[in-house]
Image 1 (cartoon, rainbow, N blue to C red):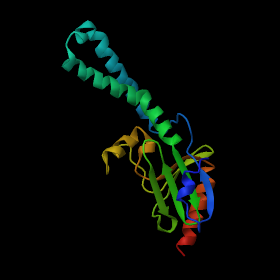
Image 2: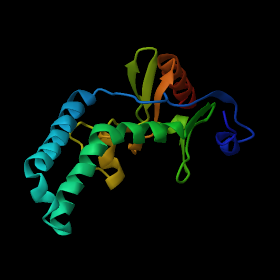
Image 3: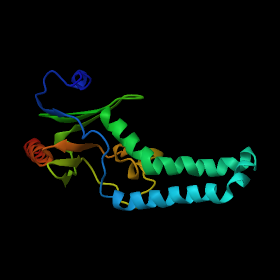
Image 4: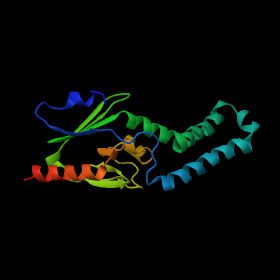
Length: 189
């Protein structure tokens, strides 16, 4: 593991765990709805180009722009979102210390999130086999478009973009969740 997150840990902290999210293409619960929707959307775009055939290409640039925008959107929601999510997760590191949760996202820029364990209000655990997702705040609803930012709107399609700090697809997720809950209980005494 790179020393990236190590530079953000305090000398007086004890590192209890370090890890990364699950790597590669990852399907989640909402994909039961997203995959058919994305295939329907992509099919509609293909139908527009197929039915229109030469007529669309002969319409000129302004009229070609509309189907092209829908084509790019169809590519993103069908395949691109999975690749995008995998790329984002490949640039994330996690650490759990005796005092804090530390999440470092790198890639096109750096984003450091630290959470004081004693001040965590809500922790949610979503088991996924021997792995799990640990959310340090409320989960986004399936119908939760909007939210605090434009980026958060895309978290329905690309879960790693969620503004809710989280450990995504970590190994031995239940054990890590229990460890965090134990630290939180100690910190509140």
